[in-house]
Image 1 (cartoon, rainbow, N blue to C red):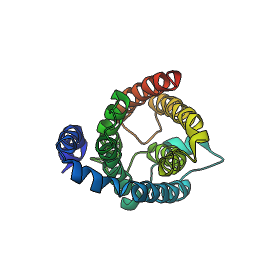
Image 2 (cartoon, rainbow, N blue to C red; image 1 turned 180 degrees about the vertical axis):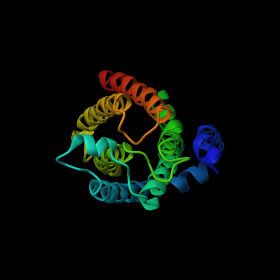
Image 3 (cartoon, rainbow, N blue to C red; image 1 turned 90 degrees about the vertical axis):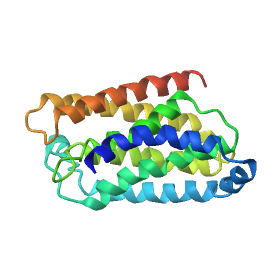
Image 4 (tube, helix red, strand yellow; image 1 turned 30 degrees about the vertical axis):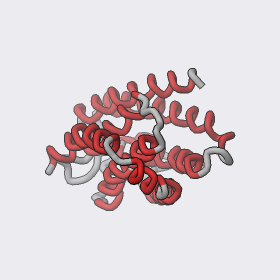
Length: 213
């Protein structure tokens, strides 16, 4: 099970993309009917995640927020992992709408679930940077999926969302560096190194995307 959680998404997402590209025009049209509902539901889930994880943030103690052991809570741990698989539907909707899948989109959706998994697999509870990562990500996703719900109406939010995504990745890189050099943080070097690689990749690709606007 641990192997599947860690490496399954890295294999499963390319397979999912391949399957989506073989769908008939009729099936693509049918799938697109659920796009607004999908975006609305993820917006609501992101609001819930943002509020739920805020309970585990020590607002007056940054070190404790980033380093203190997390209480066992399978609801947030596995729901956030599952949400990264759920977000693969973003890719399905793009393919069904005959849109191009960028490397940014492909790399992000292929790696996100595994990045979440490495922060809890093999542990009794998620590691100490899990909650702040979920909080930052869910906050950005509230705005992002609201925009996806009606891109024309919320077009004014587009550049702001990308700026916030870039800020999110910058903050996570600094958080990972802090946790890596602090001997008290309840995390692992492996998870931090994978996180540093992924967030650096995201930062570069999102910055390139922003510059190309």
